[in-house]
Length: 322
Image 1 (tube, rainbow, N blue to C red):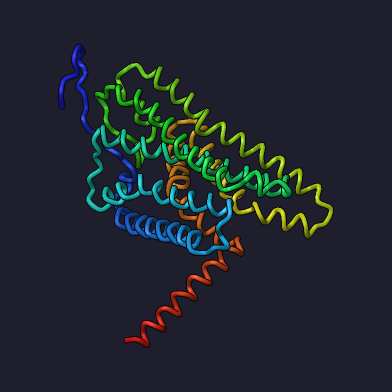
Image 2: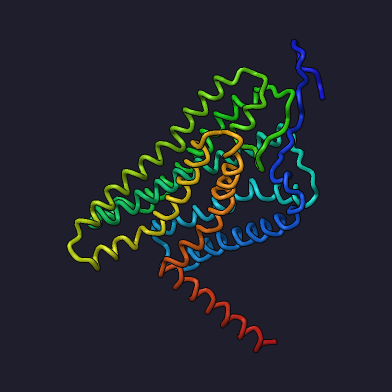
C-alpha cells in the first residue's frame, strides 16, 4: 500500500476478484468444468481454422470471416479463463491493478473486434442473398481483407483510447470486485478519481465498437429476411435461410446475453444473474460457436470428413512403413 498524494485515501495496488468464492465447496468442480470448457473451446476453434485453411472448398469470404472469428474466440476466452482457472485451483483471487487494466484492455479489444466481424459477416450474407449477381465483384479478396483488418484495428483502437484514460485513474479504499474478470463497470466503481470523463469515453467507444456494428447487423438481417420472404418457392426460401442461419444464431446469442448483462438493473437480487449471463457470453459463446457452424453447416462437416480421412490414410501408411 502507498499513500495517495494530497488526500487521506490509501492507494491500492491490487484487486480481489471474488468470482465464485462464495461457494467454496464447488471450487474443484468449477475448476474441472471450466477446464473442460476451455480445452474444448480452444480445440474446436483451432479445428475450424485448420479446416478453413486446409480445404480449398472453404476458401470463400464466408469461411474467411469464420476463420477470423474462430481465432478471435480462442484469444477472447483466453483473456478470462486461464486466470479464473488459476484462481479456482490455488485460491488466490488477487490481481494487480495494472494486470486488471491489461485484462480489460484485451477483453474490450476482442469484444469490439467480434462486434465488427459479426457485422462484416452479416454484410457478406446480405450481398450473397440480396445481391447474388454482384456478390463475386463486391465481396472479392481485397474487400474481405479490408473488412477483417478494419475489424481488428477498430477493436484495438477504441479500447486503446478507453484504456489511455482509464489507466490515469487512482484506486483506493475498497478493492473487492464481485466478478470473475475485470469488467469496466465494477472496476470504475472502485476508483476514487473523477470518472465522468472515462464514462463519457466509454459511451463514445461503445457506440463505435458495439452499437454501430449491431445496427449494421440488424439492418442487414432486416434486408435479408425481406429478401427471403419475397422468394416464391418454399424450397428456395429454406435454402436461402440455411446460408445465414448459423450466423444469425451466433449473433442472437452474443448480443442477447450482452444486452441482458449491461442493461439489467444492478441490484443485489440480480447480481448473480448478471454473473451467470457474463459466463455465457465470455465463456460459453466461444465454445458453442464452432459447434453451431459445424453441426449446421454441410461444407464444414464435409471438410471435417475429408481431413479425418486424410489423417486416417496417413496413419495407415505410417503403420505399414513401421
